[in-house]
Image 1 (cartoon, rainbow, N blue to C red):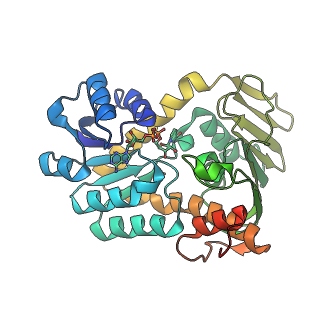
Image 2 (cartoon, rainbow, N blue to C red):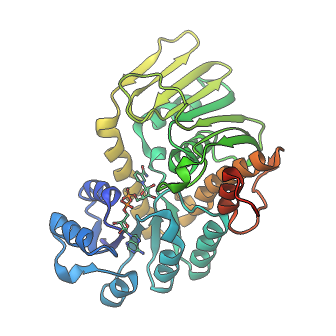
Image 3 (tube, rainbow, N blue to C red):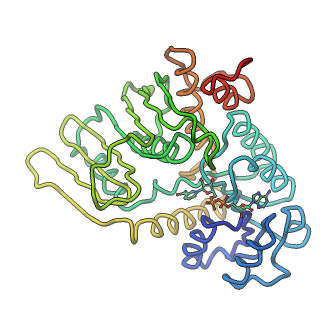
Length: 346
Ligand SMILES: NC(=O)c1ccc[n+]([C@@H]2O[C@H](COP(=O)([O-])OP(=O)(O)OC[C@H]3O[C@@H](n4cnc5c(N)ncnc54)[C@H](O)[C@@H]3O)[C@@H](O)[C@H]2O)c1
């Protein structure tokens, strides 16, 4: 069975998705949408989508094409609006890129409209499907790492850019146990003007409900411990019998008591596409089988990353441990920006 796809946003990330989609024949790209006419034309020409398959708005696409699955690969600022139109337009599933949203209320609203419409909503946290993550999961499942004591992760980009990915990955490695609280601090305002608005840097300790701690450091000061890496996105799982360490684009090492260390290098060239292909195949399976509750990227899990980053900011502003999910007023990110930049009336 083939599902018809509509691609919203024709930027560089959607082009990466096309590389993966070419390996998933069950997903047929039927249409693309971009508000930018030049990007739309270039994308259509590059991937063989004729003028009749290119649209300037999501509404126009839905009026002309039957779409089963839509990907929303735009700036996070406009995602809610797009998801609302898609949800009313009869699609079966929507995959939004990370970060799911900038504001918590937008993330909750997306979940609500899709749940009400009976649509499967997912967040593109493809790191769950990276081969090295599978190796760490196997080590955990076979108990060779023992009981997890803590997870630590670092990345040079900010909370909404890459930390959401790393928090999601940590969540996956601890079995999607819910986060209970966070104590964090944030600093720097340069990134508020970027594609991923928010403080430049953050440090945070999170507690999962089962007591495991997650230690996060993100921002330009974060460690660069491998010369071969470009992204420097690291995750470490420390158990009472072993340790697994992985850099998303550098390699992993699993060390367990007695056994020789397992090591693999240079994962990036193949790993990214492998992970994205696996995610798309997983979507096909859960949409066709109508098993949204089994989708590893379901938005009810993805939303926890936004709760975690907003909770970190609230902890920093209020100088206290914040229970998760955080309770914040609408527009909280803007409040954080005003506070950090010292704008009066914040
Ligand atoms: N999962 C990952 O590993 C990964 C990697 C890279 C980027 N991303 C995410 O993907 C998203 C997009 O990244 P990008 O670099 O391609 O961004 P981009 O801003 O360069 O491209 C987004 C495109 O969306 C279009 N757009 C904006 N509003 C629109 C609307 N209302 N309707 C239709 N099109 C609209 C823009 O014109 C633009 O062409 C970001 O959220 C980014 O964080 C994820």
